[in-house]
Length: 296
Image (cartoon, rainbow, N blue to C red):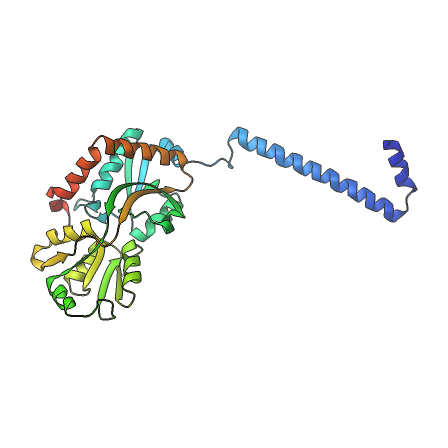
């Protein structure tokens, strides 16, 4: 049959010959291309080349460091001392994680709004920074937790509360509200008080300063931060409205494909909570106030 096919080709006219030859050449090229792709895939799988993804656990093990992204300005969950050390509930938890991994904890501080971009870029292994687990954030990164439940409230002055009670509503352009830029607090103001004047701050220190200086009528933030500010500035007659207006589960953000790291963190948090150590850490940082003197 093969010989007959060869003879048929010579008996065809020029156009018929060209069409059949091109068809066979195309089939041969397709086979060669498929073989090239197949062997290329086999080579990648065997030698662990550039196509093999490097996980966070790989980076942590090879570098000997657990790199944690944090704002370092959200007491008592995370804060920076006069000496430049990062302390708080989350840094202490991160150090415990690093010790369990057999590596050292390293903290990268940056504005809150830059934390998730840094995580997605692989500049940090995880983010622990009073970050609320939200559906929008969870579409880009994975979350483990929560390890703490928070909620939004007001930090303001007695004078403003008295004047606000006389007003029909807070939601007007004359009301100046400050909130951390890129946070769920900013989102809360935009959704609940859309007519109010929003003054975003790069960190909580900036936001609190606006309230103290009278540039903002109130700050919207997680209640631990508001309550701490009342304690830190007793002469300014600050008050915090409680209970919180929202439910805010705080978790650890990691890259979306880090399955092994997610599993490790889940087991770590389960053990920490089950042993009672998580409760002890929360009591240490939320009920004790010795660390306040270390702040700038």
